[in-house]
Length: 240
Image 1 (cartoon, rainbow, N blue to C red):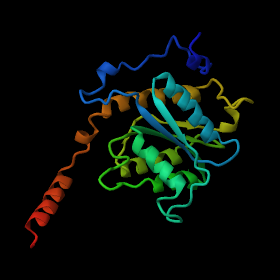
Image 2: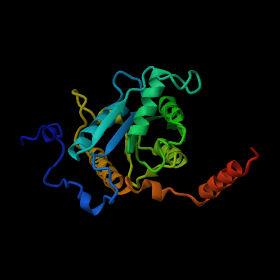
Image 3: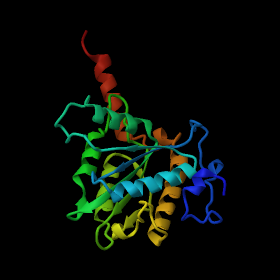
Image 4: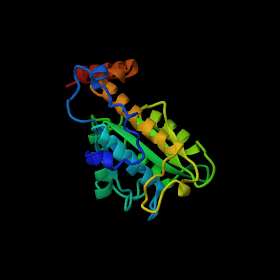
């Protein structure tokens, strides 16, 4: 095994891995560059299991040929506590605009996603001028729990993904008792939980290849076309 990416994935059985066949999926208007995936995690702990899951997902994304960015939420202000030109807010919004897909990984706290996770999502607007930084982009959701397996955080993130007009993939990952799933080197141990993360990443890559280049058409809405026509008529017919 000479591939450095594969050497960094010791729990993967590469005889069972399948590269995504992009010819089946990409549109004629595909931009041609590797899929761009932004990963967000929802904890500031020194040993953050949501961050460790994001790092495992990033390694898998790179095997699939994706370009990745992980946003560090440390020093991100609370929503509306600062202006949008705050450096961390600007960094997050630039990454959201850059991306073609996202992975959100949150711990579950008090039966919900964390405030850190929600703050990141709240700082990403539905529109930036004429640009909608999330509409038509793909999304995968994952969560880690300190106790038994739960789906509260990922269910909430699915609602938010829909609100942000994202294409949220069917698969998802929930890692129970996450503190037992990582070794002393902060690498995830072989398990059914790890295999599900492999599944989620593969599915996200497939959906991203399929959606990008088509997203403008897929999210084109009748109601918005009517509104645009009304706005145009108002501007053209206003008195000089």
